[in-house]
Image 1 (cartoon, rainbow, N blue to C red):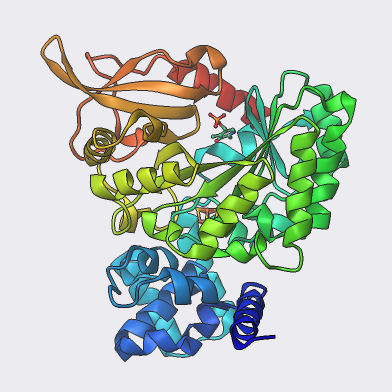
Image 2 (cartoon, rainbow, N blue to C red):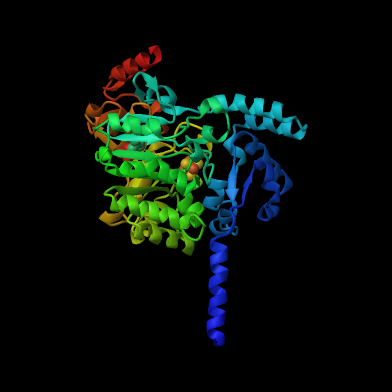
Length: 458
Ligand SMILES: *Cc1c(COP(=O)(O)O)cnc(C)c1O
Ligand code: SF4
């Protein structure tokens, strides 16, 4: 063996050892152990600790070492996304928690105080827990949601954590451990029985948390049965995940990676469309070679990766960022799918931007890219009545208005019908909008109110 070959071998094994490396992650309690945070003052680190007592955090070694650009911290977008920031809490809430932490209050006192703050942070926006729970023979099925005709959401109980605890995520109650706030399914029998009974459903969306934190074996128990002829009506299997950019080893190098790829391939061969719904908020997330390797492997198995993200202040509230992200995605064969407006939950106060700015970002980004990169729908507000897209600002009969339409609606008949809200430069969510032209209500409001009171009564 000549020297050249030896050195190549050593290099190869070093790489695979790294790719297969153990998952190490940090929570609020262990933030102090992250060496990179030493560059912050004691006050800054204390603030992170205080915020993490209210909004849980979880940051892994890969994100710290390969995703965050520490030269650019604190402005670095992925630092902003992953680490607790002082202004995520209102000044009053911050002071309350800070005083308790300073006085070394016990865990019980801290968690009670946190709970009081959570209650104000709208932990189940858009009536998630009451309106969308499907039923089988009159029995509600926890761990599932069925809001739009074609798509059933499944929340497997082992998948209720995530590689990132984005504090703007409507899933954050899943991460704080308050069991009454979680919905998580135990076992798959109910799921299969329900899908069997719903012939109009074409899509199963497995979500969490992040189902990619689950072992392949557990995922297979959910997905393989769908290859049986009785589930011919299920065309597409979607899996929502942050693992692609925050723990790509799930797809490359981890002990369980090959089995996962084989599972996806089997589903594709069996005639299903496998869609990986990647949570990607910035082009920077696609930079590490291992992320690109994970993309290629998933595509090699026949899966199509689509991307979605909310638009967020401090992270991606600028047209160039989206244009660059979409271009890089298209180059990797990833299909841009959704741009969301940050939801009315969690740390929204830190990330929210006015709808009018959101539109500027969307329109500013779209005009810089080719048609292939213009596939993201949005900006879309996912609220109780449905997914409402903000299409633009127009002047109609002398009144300045937002032009809106449902991309998805609780009543399918509402879909795609344009409607109008009074222009408001400060509005940042559906609740802030009022009907245009002096109307009292939006066209769907009466029916939606009836649906809500019906659900409350049952
Ligand atoms: C977004 C969403 C879906 C999927 O909608 P598509 O337009 O098909 O991507 C399904 N169910 C719920 C509850 C959703 O919020
Ligand atoms: S599910 Fe997505 S948005 Fe929510 S915490 Fe995980 S990565 Fe963030």
